Image (cartoon, rainbow, N blue to C red):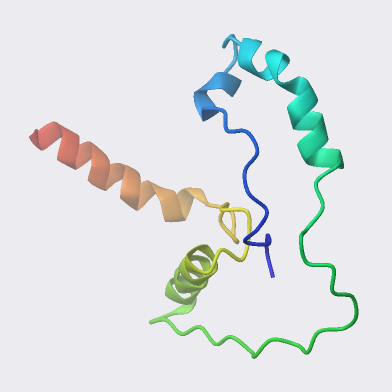
Length: 108
């Protein structure tokens, strides 16, 4: 599930490089490597066929919201995705963290 462990990052760019008005020169200078990584990379494992299904995963939490948070952490820890949240953040889930951060920065 998710990306293969052998699917190494060929190129890394700082996320700030993609902010509006940022300098895209490093991307332009490496565009051939980007295209090659997206189109030519092949996995080292050449096994074909049907794999047995993985065991079922059970996630528990105090309530539904906690179970969703636990599921997201489980996916992140096992590298079963691309690193983005399984369930997109909502205002209701993000605001408590924003308020805590504001309180911490105000007390500093």
